[in-house]
Each structure stands twice: as C-alpha cells, then as structure tokens.
Image 1 (cartoon, one colour):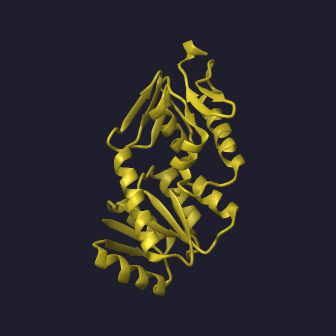
Image 2 (image 1 turned 90 degrees about the vertical axis):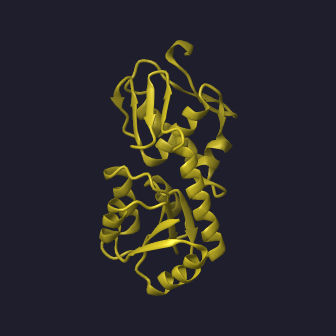
Length: 227
C-alpha cells in the first residue's frame, strides 16, 4: 500500500515509518502543506495521512484544495490532536474520510487505513452511477443533473453516492452516517444539515425534486414522474 504522510513532526514521522514499513507500506512524506498538495497531485497514492497543524497551508486548507480544486478522490485520514466535535465536522466537511485523534494506537491506524483503501477500491468498481437524469462519475468526482453540473460539498458528494447506489430504494439515516463517518458519527443534526445543503444543489434549480425524506426512516431518490 502506497501512503502519503503530510506531517511536520519528525518523531511522529519516525513512529509511522517504524510501524508501517515492516507491514509492507510504501511511504512518502511531505513536511508542509504546500509540498503535500504537490506530492498528492503529482503521484498516485492509495491513501493520505494528513496532520491539521502544518506550517504554511494547514491541513484543513490542504484537504479542501485537494478535493475542491483538484477533485482528488484518494482517501484522506486526518491525524490530529484537535478532538472537538466542531473540529471533526470541519474535517469531514472539507473532504476527510476518517479522523483519528492523537494519541492514537498504531494498530488502529493500520486498520483504519486498510478499511479506507478497501472502501475506496470497492467504490471504483462501478465508476459511473446513473439514476433518471442524474449522473455521477466517481473517477472525476463530477455530478450532473439534466446535463447541468452540481456544485456539491465533499460530504454532499458522499451522500449522493450512497443515495444513487441504493436508488430507487430507501437508505436509512444510520446507513448514510456509517457510509460517511464510519463508527464515529457526529450529533444527529449534522446529517440533517448536509441533506439540506445537498437539496440546494440537487433540487432547488430544477422544477421537480428528486431527494425525498421519509420521516423517522431515511431518504431516497425518485424520478420526477414519481413525485
């Protein structure tokens, strides 16, 4: 597994090398955010381990740049001492796939990286999803409805992917939360906020809604003739 570590602390870098390399990992290191963006976009990696507290461009900006400007789909695990709910929500909102708080267990880091890569590879088996006039290309991170590009947040993109995989069937709130946040979902209002933001991009510019809420159960996509 080829992993990029964007971290400026030499002790942490040494610990990661000492534990992960004997397990068969190939590691690249970038010691600041600008170099991290260059390495992430210039080479192919299976996953990225990203610290938040970096010199120059911080980890949030790095993640946002990779997702928004470069449409990079590589799984990103944030590794940081920041442990508030707000910090975690910010990380997920800009496109992180997982969030591990220092001090952390190296075996847990290994397990989370493997799970992220496994999930990413499974997602790319079917790279183009289609439902009604909705199209989503996982290889480019680009989504359209009726040929019109949708301006999605990273979390909105993940929710839409889960909805399209399930369509036209219902997907429960719990299933969406697991898909986005794994075993560490934030408070119950977080998903509702992301669904609202997704609706603004997916439904507001069009005459008929596609995203339906089934109160107390979950969500599903419909084609306009069903609504």
